Amino acid sequence: MTFPADFLWGAATAAYQVEGAWDKDGKGPSIWDNFVRIPGKTFDGTTGDVAADHYNRYKEDVALMAEMGLKSYRFSISWPRVMPKGRGGVNEKGIEFYSNLIDELIKHGIVPFVTLYHWDLPQALQDEVDGWESRECVDAFEEYARLCFERFGDRVNHWITFNEPIVFQMFGYVTEAHPPAKSNPHLLYQTSHYVNLAHARAVKAYREIGGTGEIGITNVINPAYPYTDSVADREATWWSESYSFHWYYDPILKGEYPAEYLAAIEEAYGKLDITEDDISLLKQAKSDFIGINYYQPSRVAANNSETSHSNGRESNTGAAGTASFCGRYRTVLDTEQFEYTKWLWEICPDALRDSMHRIKDRYGDIPIYITENGLGDEDPIVNGEVLDEARIDYIRRHLLACKQAISEGINLKGYYAWSWIDLLSWLNGYKKQYGFVYVDRENLQRKKKQSYHWYEEVIATNGESL
Ligand code: BG6
Image 1 (cartoon, protein in one colour):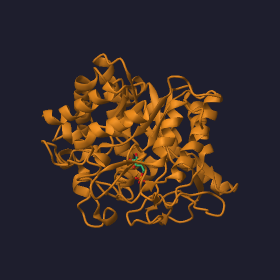
Image 2 (cartoon, protein in one colour):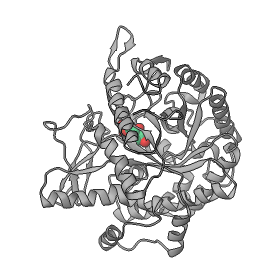
Image 3 (cartoon, helix red, strand yellow):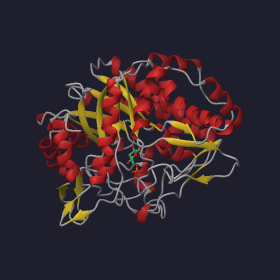
Image 4 (cartoon, rainbow, N blue to C red):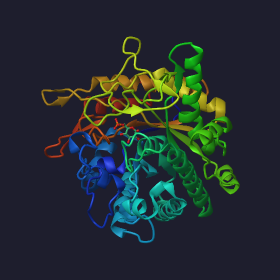
């Protein structure tokens, strides 16, 4: 029972959540730059205008990573920073920033793991082509991906096309919690298909230009368990698995959509624009790995009404449990039976292990990276020290689940804690902390938390200290 010698011990961030400098050096606006300015959309009206000021402090941040012994850093490129209008026209200052960041990482022996899309679509594409509602956005994404491969591909060998399509599609097209804040299930599924095409086009482009590294996608996984053993709850669990797991993973890893589920949604919401050529493209674009972001499982029960209901997943009020989903199933909160974070996300390390088995059972022995996992909390500060013991406990238990999965034959290649540094939580502002590094919101100074020192030892011992 041990981690492989080349296991990538990592931590992750995303551009909008850490960089700041939202309008500096020729960057174009993203849909998030505008969305956060709509009153009531984010906790306390928080924006990512400054975030963790990583744009200006990246050298200091990389030095802290190096001191910890971090093996790999997952970050995302802001599309409108390098292509202000999303297509046709490169911002060389933006390219320079990422180029410098990559060089700095490599200089310190840290492997860059790059996400191309972590939700900050150029506003121009939303305005001009309706964003992911159109095939033109797919063309634009390929142009952007090629630019990144050409400019950074000599140094970057690990590429993630998209982060968690389910989240930006569900929140963008059903719950209205993310931009473009529409409520239209047909668009949810249609944009989902176009994003899969954009992923496939990027994979194909990477091979065409002779990329020798690896490329894949990151999806969130919330393995579903029936809340009770009733037939109704088990049926509801089928809907949950079909949507949140198979709908998102099958087209990437099998090149097809789950037929029964596709038929059901087309009957409910109308025919989707999916052509035979599209399917053949999906089949050709083989991913080298699958990235999974795991936070919690779903306890699923039948949804007895067509009305929406609260399930505690997201909130822009600073409290848990105020957003809603609707559909054929609902997720249940049961604080008597299960363990939860302050934001009512269930803590269940064994469901992470189970998630990896579900992937292997359905798709075979594809290499897996845990590209996010971590605890959102309000960390206690005692005598000036950030004592985030709860985070240590959370990550330790999830890493033990990873270790067990490896011993059971799962091909797990790396683990990226979410997050490297305290950053903007999309809807919860800076109130919800995830990092190993604390950021003083007054002066943006960095401070190592207790978990920083703990993870340092985990890495130094290749997990033996767990
Ligand atoms: C993932 C995202 O969904 O969850 C991250 O990829 C995000 O960007 C993380 O920050 C935690 O979510 P939240 O809402 O607690 O910030």
